[in-house]
Image (cartoon, rainbow, N blue to C red; front, side, top):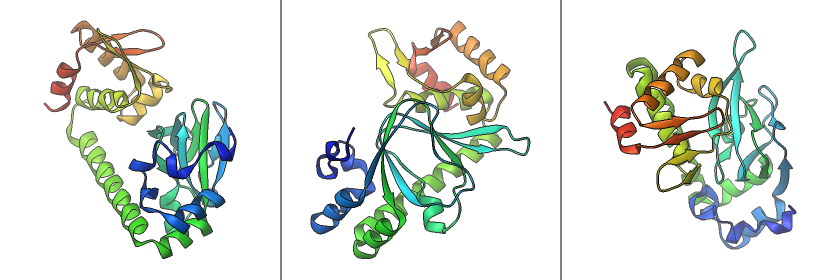
Length: 233
């Protein structure tokens, strides 16, 4: 996909993006100075600890963010889908990237350099406000995740994760919603702070109650309402 194939003004993700605040010369600047990159599954967009050089907009595909723990084991912290931006916290803090970003399926990403972003922020108060709002929402989400790990049961956390992953990442049939999650079960277990064994055991329990169906490669939600009840117990 070429740069000319993705136009910021008519991008399908623009309405939900922080860049929806841009118009006229500012939007033209974004269009002119962004770069478009294609990544294959397993390719790294940036590494943890390297200088933050740009903000990234995921146009299509999926990206996982992971940190390396004390034992050099990767810890998945987020799964990103089309329309999401990432890399901006390190950029604003003038710090290295705090996590590694890796494509977990074919992905197309628009990249906006640090000088371009900062110039747009200086000239667009609306863009600045939207970015601050996104930071606030992300902070709230992080706090809620910390509280969940401290106070919720593993079953609740897994139910919440499955519901979260089902949003915009599913194939719907009359009987079930099949999740298209490009993550290993061990990575999903990491995201809710449990072991792969406990994660698999909980999936089997939910399957025995008719709430979901599990195969080697996919998870199908048969009873979303029951899963929602578990998540808010």
